[in-house]
Image (cartoon, rainbow, N blue to C red; front, side, top):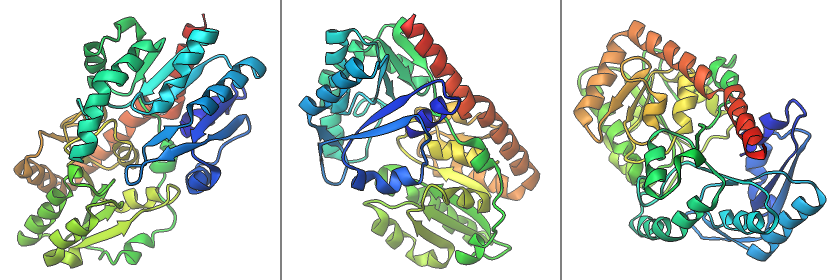
Length: 373
Protein backbone atom coordinates (compact mmCIF):
# COMPACT_ATOMS: atom_id res chain seq x y z
CA UNK A 1 0.00 0.00 0.00
CA UNK A 2 2.93 2.34 0.71
CA UNK A 3 4.35 1.69 -2.76
CA UNK A 4 1.01 2.21 -4.51
CA UNK A 5 0.36 5.42 -2.56
CA UNK A 6 3.82 6.78 -3.34
CA UNK A 7 3.40 6.27 -7.08
CA UNK A 8 -0.21 7.48 -7.20
CA UNK A 9 0.77 10.88 -5.83
CA UNK A 10 4.06 11.23 -7.72
CA UNK A 11 2.41 13.16 -10.56
CA UNK A 12 0.29 15.23 -8.13
CA UNK A 13 -2.94 13.79 -9.55
CA UNK A 14 -4.05 12.00 -6.39
CA UNK A 15 -4.18 12.48 -2.64
CA UNK A 16 -3.94 9.41 -0.46
CA UNK A 17 -4.70 8.80 3.21
CA UNK A 18 -3.55 5.52 4.71
CA UNK A 19 -5.54 4.41 7.76
CA UNK A 20 -3.18 2.06 9.53
CA UNK A 21 -3.82 -0.07 12.64
CA UNK A 22 -1.27 0.49 15.35
CA UNK A 23 0.77 3.55 16.23
CA UNK A 24 3.67 5.47 14.79
CA UNK A 25 6.16 3.77 17.13
CA UNK A 26 5.18 0.29 15.90
CA UNK A 27 5.69 1.25 12.26
CA UNK A 28 8.52 3.77 12.55
CA UNK A 29 11.18 1.49 11.05
CA UNK A 30 8.93 0.26 8.24
CA UNK A 31 7.73 3.70 7.15
CA UNK A 32 11.15 5.33 7.49
CA UNK A 33 12.63 2.83 5.01
CA UNK A 34 9.85 3.62 2.53
CA UNK A 35 9.95 7.42 2.17
CA UNK A 36 6.51 8.81 1.41
CA UNK A 37 5.90 11.85 -0.75
CA UNK A 38 3.85 14.99 -0.36
CA UNK A 39 0.18 14.16 -0.86
CA UNK A 40 0.22 11.09 1.41
CA UNK A 41 -1.04 11.18 4.96
CA UNK A 42 -0.89 8.33 7.47
CA UNK A 43 -3.44 8.12 10.27
CA UNK A 44 -2.94 5.52 12.99
CA UNK A 45 -5.91 3.63 14.43
CA UNK A 46 -5.95 1.89 17.81
CA UNK A 47 -5.87 -1.90 17.46
CA UNK A 48 -5.00 -5.01 19.43
CA UNK A 49 -2.21 -7.07 17.85
CA UNK A 50 -2.14 -10.82 18.45
CA UNK A 51 1.36 -11.86 19.52
CA UNK A 52 3.51 -13.84 17.12
CA UNK A 53 1.44 -13.55 13.93
CA UNK A 54 0.99 -9.76 14.02
CA UNK A 55 -2.72 -10.03 13.16
CA UNK A 56 -4.75 -7.09 14.44
CA UNK A 57 -8.25 -6.52 15.76
CA UNK A 58 -9.11 -2.85 15.13
CA UNK A 59 -11.23 -0.49 17.18
CA UNK A 60 -14.21 -0.47 14.82
CA UNK A 61 -15.90 2.64 16.22
CA UNK A 62 -12.77 4.76 15.69
CA UNK A 63 -12.15 3.31 12.24
CA UNK A 64 -15.74 4.09 11.18
CA UNK A 65 -15.44 7.59 12.65
CA UNK A 66 -12.19 8.22 10.75
CA UNK A 67 -13.68 6.98 7.47
CA UNK A 68 -16.81 9.09 8.00
CA UNK A 69 -14.72 12.22 8.55
CA UNK A 70 -12.62 11.55 5.44
CA UNK A 71 -15.75 11.18 3.33
CA UNK A 72 -17.65 14.10 4.86
CA UNK A 73 -14.89 16.67 5.29
CA UNK A 74 -12.09 15.69 2.90
CA UNK A 75 -14.00 14.56 -0.19
CA UNK A 76 -12.80 10.94 -0.11
CA UNK A 77 -13.98 9.40 -3.40
CA UNK A 78 -12.78 5.79 -3.09
CA UNK A 79 -11.97 3.52 -0.16
CA UNK A 80 -9.50 0.71 -0.86
CA UNK A 81 -8.98 -2.02 1.73
CA UNK A 82 -6.07 -4.44 1.88
CA UNK A 83 -6.86 -8.17 2.38
CA UNK A 84 -10.25 -9.56 3.38
CA UNK A 85 -8.65 -11.64 6.11
CA UNK A 86 -8.03 -8.49 8.17
CA UNK A 87 -11.04 -7.21 10.12
CA UNK A 88 -10.16 -3.67 8.98
CA UNK A 89 -11.95 -4.64 5.74
CA UNK A 90 -15.34 -4.63 7.51
CA UNK A 91 -15.73 -0.89 8.23
CA UNK A 92 -15.57 0.19 4.54
CA UNK A 93 -18.62 -2.02 3.84
CA UNK A 94 -20.58 -0.05 6.44
CA UNK A 95 -19.44 3.29 4.95
CA UNK A 96 -20.36 2.09 1.46
CA UNK A 97 -23.91 1.26 2.56
CA UNK A 98 -24.27 4.52 4.50
CA UNK A 99 -22.66 6.97 2.07
CA UNK A 100 -22.43 5.15 -1.25
CA UNK A 101 -18.66 5.68 -1.49
CA UNK A 102 -17.25 2.96 -3.81
CA UNK A 103 -15.08 0.35 -2.11
CA UNK A 104 -12.27 -1.74 -3.58
CA UNK A 105 -10.63 -4.73 -1.92
CA UNK A 106 -7.11 -5.87 -2.81
CA UNK A 107 -6.23 -9.38 -1.66
CA UNK A 108 -3.25 -11.65 -2.24
CA UNK A 109 -4.41 -15.02 -0.92
CA UNK A 110 -7.26 -17.16 0.41
CA UNK A 111 -5.89 -18.13 3.85
CA UNK A 112 -6.86 -21.61 4.96
CA UNK A 113 -8.16 -22.44 1.48
CA UNK A 114 -5.43 -22.06 -1.14
CA UNK A 115 -2.75 -20.46 1.06
CA UNK A 116 -1.12 -21.66 4.28
CA UNK A 117 0.60 -19.72 7.03
CA UNK A 118 2.30 -22.91 8.18
CA UNK A 119 0.82 -23.09 11.68
CA UNK A 120 -1.95 -25.66 12.22
CA UNK A 121 -3.98 -23.50 14.63
CA UNK A 122 -3.66 -20.33 12.54
CA UNK A 123 -4.56 -22.19 9.34
CA UNK A 124 -7.61 -23.85 10.94
CA UNK A 125 -8.94 -20.52 12.22
CA UNK A 126 -8.17 -18.93 8.84
CA UNK A 127 -10.17 -21.60 7.01
CA UNK A 128 -13.20 -21.08 9.25
CA UNK A 129 -12.92 -17.32 8.77
CA UNK A 130 -12.53 -17.58 4.98
CA UNK A 131 -15.62 -19.75 4.62
CA UNK A 132 -17.77 -17.48 6.81
CA UNK A 133 -16.90 -13.80 7.40
CA UNK A 134 -14.35 -13.74 4.59
CA UNK A 135 -16.82 -14.97 2.00
CA UNK A 136 -19.27 -12.24 2.99
CA UNK A 137 -16.57 -9.56 2.78
CA UNK A 138 -15.46 -10.66 -0.70
CA UNK A 139 -19.04 -10.47 -1.97
CA UNK A 140 -19.68 -7.04 -0.44
CA UNK A 141 -17.06 -5.00 -2.28
CA UNK A 142 -17.78 -3.15 -5.53
CA UNK A 143 -14.53 -4.45 -6.98
CA UNK A 144 -12.06 -7.12 -5.88
CA UNK A 145 -8.43 -6.77 -7.05
CA UNK A 146 -6.50 -10.03 -7.17
CA UNK A 147 -2.73 -10.24 -7.43
CA UNK A 148 -2.37 -13.37 -9.57
CA UNK A 149 -4.28 -15.56 -12.01
CA UNK A 150 -4.94 -18.60 -9.79
CA UNK A 151 -6.84 -16.37 -7.34
CA UNK A 152 -9.50 -15.61 -9.97
CA UNK A 153 -10.99 -19.11 -9.81
CA UNK A 154 -10.77 -19.05 -6.01
CA UNK A 155 -12.74 -15.79 -5.88
CA UNK A 156 -15.38 -17.14 -8.26
CA UNK A 157 -15.74 -20.23 -6.05
CA UNK A 158 -16.62 -17.86 -3.19
CA UNK A 159 -19.34 -16.17 -5.21
CA UNK A 160 -17.52 -13.08 -6.53
CA UNK A 161 -18.95 -12.26 -9.95
CA UNK A 162 -16.45 -12.08 -12.81
CA UNK A 163 -17.33 -8.47 -13.69
CA UNK A 164 -16.32 -7.44 -10.18
CA UNK A 165 -12.84 -8.98 -10.46
CA UNK A 166 -9.69 -7.18 -11.61
CA UNK A 167 -6.26 -8.80 -11.95
CA UNK A 168 -3.56 -6.33 -10.88
CA UNK A 169 -0.25 -7.53 -9.39
CA UNK A 170 1.97 -5.85 -6.84
CA UNK A 171 4.46 -3.37 -8.20
CA UNK A 172 8.21 -3.20 -7.71
CA UNK A 173 10.81 -0.43 -7.60
CA UNK A 174 12.46 -1.99 -10.64
CA UNK A 175 15.41 0.37 -11.00
CA UNK A 176 16.37 -0.04 -7.33
CA UNK A 177 16.88 -3.77 -7.82
CA UNK A 178 18.11 -3.69 -11.41
CA UNK A 179 21.03 -1.37 -10.73
CA UNK A 180 24.12 -3.13 -9.43
CA UNK A 181 25.41 -1.55 -6.20
CA UNK A 182 28.69 0.35 -6.42
CA UNK A 183 29.74 -1.03 -3.02
CA UNK A 184 30.83 -4.67 -3.49
CA UNK A 185 31.97 -5.31 0.09
CA UNK A 186 29.03 -7.58 1.00
CA UNK A 187 30.74 -10.76 -0.21
CA UNK A 188 33.70 -10.01 2.07
CA UNK A 189 31.37 -9.21 4.96
CA UNK A 190 29.67 -12.61 4.56
CA UNK A 191 33.03 -14.41 4.10
CA UNK A 192 32.23 -15.56 0.57
CA UNK A 193 35.29 -16.52 -1.48
CA UNK A 194 35.64 -15.32 -5.06
CA UNK A 195 35.28 -18.90 -6.33
CA UNK A 196 32.15 -19.68 -4.31
CA UNK A 197 28.77 -19.63 -6.03
CA UNK A 198 25.86 -18.23 -4.00
CA UNK A 199 22.38 -19.71 -3.58
CA UNK A 200 20.07 -17.12 -2.01
CA UNK A 201 16.83 -17.37 -0.05
CA UNK A 202 14.94 -14.34 1.30
CA UNK A 203 11.84 -14.75 3.46
CA UNK A 204 10.24 -15.71 6.75
CA UNK A 205 12.01 -18.61 8.43
CA UNK A 206 9.07 -20.93 9.03
CA UNK A 207 8.73 -24.59 8.13
CA UNK A 208 6.21 -23.79 5.38
CA UNK A 209 9.12 -22.15 3.51
CA UNK A 210 10.97 -25.51 3.26
CA UNK A 211 14.41 -23.94 3.68
CA UNK A 212 15.67 -27.46 4.46
CA UNK A 213 15.60 -28.06 0.69
CA UNK A 214 18.13 -25.25 0.18
CA UNK A 215 20.31 -26.68 2.97
CA UNK A 216 20.09 -30.17 1.44
CA UNK A 217 20.95 -28.71 -1.99
CA UNK A 218 24.04 -27.08 -0.53
CA UNK A 219 25.13 -30.36 1.08
CA UNK A 220 24.62 -32.30 -2.15
CA UNK A 221 26.55 -29.79 -4.25
CA UNK A 222 29.45 -29.72 -1.78
CA UNK A 223 29.55 -33.53 -1.85
CA UNK A 224 29.92 -33.33 -5.64
CA UNK A 225 32.89 -31.01 -5.23
CA UNK A 226 31.24 -27.67 -6.07
CA UNK A 227 32.15 -24.52 -4.16
CA UNK A 228 28.83 -23.09 -3.03
CA UNK A 229 27.45 -21.05 -0.17
CA UNK A 230 23.81 -20.66 0.83
CA UNK A 231 22.85 -17.19 2.05
CA UNK A 232 19.60 -17.14 4.03
CA UNK A 233 18.08 -13.71 4.64
CA UNK A 234 15.22 -13.37 7.12
CA UNK A 235 14.13 -14.45 10.56
CA UNK A 236 11.28 -16.39 12.09
CA UNK A 237 10.19 -19.18 14.43
CA UNK A 238 12.15 -21.91 12.64
CA UNK A 239 15.52 -20.19 12.47
CA UNK A 240 17.10 -22.33 15.20
CA UNK A 241 15.73 -25.48 13.55
CA UNK A 242 17.37 -24.53 10.25
CA UNK A 243 20.62 -23.57 12.00
CA UNK A 244 20.76 -27.03 13.64
CA UNK A 245 19.98 -28.65 10.29
CA UNK A 246 22.94 -26.92 8.65
CA UNK A 247 25.40 -27.58 11.49
CA UNK A 248 27.43 -30.11 9.45
CA UNK A 249 28.03 -27.52 6.70
CA UNK A 250 27.95 -24.38 8.85
CA UNK A 251 30.91 -22.85 6.98
CA UNK A 252 28.81 -22.98 3.80
CA UNK A 253 25.56 -21.52 5.17
CA UNK A 254 25.14 -17.87 6.18
CA UNK A 255 22.14 -16.79 8.26
CA UNK A 256 22.07 -13.06 7.59
CA UNK A 257 18.99 -12.33 9.71
CA UNK A 258 16.59 -9.48 8.92
CA UNK A 259 17.92 -6.95 6.44
CA UNK A 260 16.50 -3.40 6.05
CA UNK A 261 14.54 -2.81 2.85
CA UNK A 262 17.00 -0.18 1.67
CA UNK A 263 19.86 -2.73 1.86
CA UNK A 264 18.20 -5.90 0.57
CA UNK A 265 19.01 -5.24 -3.10
CA UNK A 266 22.70 -5.80 -2.37
CA UNK A 267 22.02 -9.41 -1.39
CA UNK A 268 20.31 -10.21 -4.68
CA UNK A 269 23.33 -8.97 -6.60
CA UNK A 270 25.79 -11.31 -4.85
CA UNK A 271 23.61 -14.31 -5.73
CA UNK A 272 24.04 -16.68 -8.65
CA UNK A 273 20.63 -18.35 -8.21
CA UNK A 274 17.59 -17.43 -6.13
CA UNK A 275 15.83 -20.44 -4.57
CA UNK A 276 12.29 -20.34 -3.13
CA UNK A 277 11.18 -23.86 -2.13
CA UNK A 278 8.02 -22.81 -0.22
CA UNK A 279 4.93 -24.96 0.18
CA UNK A 280 2.74 -21.86 0.05
CA UNK A 281 3.12 -18.35 -1.38
CA UNK A 282 0.90 -15.54 -2.63
CA UNK A 283 2.62 -13.34 -5.21
CA UNK A 284 6.11 -13.37 -3.66
CA UNK A 285 7.78 -9.97 -3.82
CA UNK A 286 11.16 -11.62 -3.28
CA UNK A 287 10.84 -13.33 -6.68
CA UNK A 288 10.08 -9.99 -8.31
CA UNK A 289 13.10 -8.43 -6.63
CA UNK A 290 15.45 -11.29 -7.54
CA UNK A 291 14.22 -11.25 -11.14
CA UNK A 292 14.67 -7.48 -11.39
CA UNK A 293 18.27 -8.05 -10.28
CA UNK A 294 18.66 -10.37 -13.31
CA UNK A 295 18.90 -13.55 -11.26
CA UNK A 296 17.46 -16.87 -12.49
CA UNK A 297 14.98 -18.26 -9.96
CA UNK A 298 14.12 -21.84 -9.05
CA UNK A 299 10.87 -21.93 -7.10
CA UNK A 300 7.90 -24.09 -6.11
CA UNK A 301 4.99 -23.82 -8.52
CA UNK A 302 2.44 -22.54 -6.02
CA UNK A 303 -0.21 -19.82 -6.40
CA UNK A 304 1.24 -16.66 -8.01
CA UNK A 305 4.76 -17.98 -8.61
CA UNK A 306 3.92 -19.01 -12.19
CA UNK A 307 2.81 -15.41 -12.90
CA UNK A 308 6.43 -14.36 -12.29
CA UNK A 309 8.52 -17.28 -13.56
CA UNK A 310 8.16 -18.40 -17.16
CA UNK A 311 9.36 -21.99 -16.91
CA UNK A 312 12.51 -22.65 -18.92
CA UNK A 313 12.84 -18.99 -19.95
CA UNK A 314 13.21 -16.81 -16.84
CA UNK A 315 13.75 -19.62 -14.33
CA UNK A 316 12.40 -23.01 -13.35
CA UNK A 317 9.17 -24.09 -11.66
CA UNK A 318 9.24 -27.17 -9.42
CA UNK A 319 6.19 -29.18 -8.46
CA UNK A 320 6.42 -29.25 -4.68
CA UNK A 321 8.49 -30.50 -2.96
CA UNK A 322 10.69 -32.44 -5.45
CA UNK A 323 14.26 -32.22 -4.17
CA UNK A 324 15.70 -34.05 -7.18
CA UNK A 325 14.22 -31.49 -9.58
CA UNK A 326 15.58 -28.63 -7.50
CA UNK A 327 19.00 -30.26 -7.61
CA UNK A 328 18.76 -30.86 -11.37
CA UNK A 329 17.81 -27.25 -12.21
CA UNK A 330 20.33 -25.67 -9.83
CA UNK A 331 23.15 -27.86 -11.19
CA UNK A 332 22.21 -26.92 -14.77
CA UNK A 333 22.38 -23.23 -13.95
CA UNK A 334 25.66 -23.54 -12.08
CA UNK A 335 27.21 -25.58 -14.89
CA UNK A 336 26.13 -23.20 -17.66
CA UNK A 337 26.82 -19.56 -16.81
CA UNK A 338 25.57 -18.39 -20.20
CA UNK A 339 22.23 -20.10 -19.57
CA UNK A 340 21.99 -18.48 -16.13
CA UNK A 341 22.87 -15.09 -17.60
CA UNK A 342 20.28 -15.39 -20.39
CA UNK A 343 17.55 -16.49 -17.98
CA UNK A 344 18.40 -13.66 -15.59
CA UNK A 345 18.25 -11.07 -18.37
CA UNK A 346 14.87 -12.39 -19.56
CA UNK A 347 13.59 -12.40 -15.97
CA UNK A 348 14.49 -8.73 -15.55
CA UNK A 349 12.84 -7.82 -18.85
CA UNK A 350 9.67 -9.74 -17.96
CA UNK A 351 9.36 -8.10 -14.54
CA UNK A 352 9.98 -4.64 -15.97
CA UNK A 353 7.22 -5.11 -18.56
CA UNK A 354 4.63 -6.56 -16.16
CA UNK A 355 5.42 -5.51 -12.58
CA UNK A 356 7.09 -2.10 -12.73
CA UNK A 357 5.12 0.45 -10.70
CA UNK A 358 4.35 2.51 -13.82
CA UNK A 359 2.45 -0.44 -15.28
CA UNK A 360 0.68 -1.31 -12.03
CA UNK A 361 -0.38 2.27 -11.22
CA UNK A 362 -1.74 2.67 -14.75
CA UNK A 363 -4.02 -0.34 -14.16
CA UNK A 364 -5.23 1.06 -10.84
CA UNK A 365 -5.94 4.47 -12.37
CA UNK A 366 -8.07 2.85 -15.08
CA UNK A 367 -9.92 0.92 -12.38
CA UNK A 368 -10.52 4.06 -10.31
CA UNK A 369 -11.89 5.89 -13.33
CA UNK A 370 -14.13 2.96 -14.21
CA UNK A 371 -15.55 2.62 -10.70
CA UNK A 372 -16.18 6.38 -10.39
CA UNK A 373 -17.85 6.51 -13.82
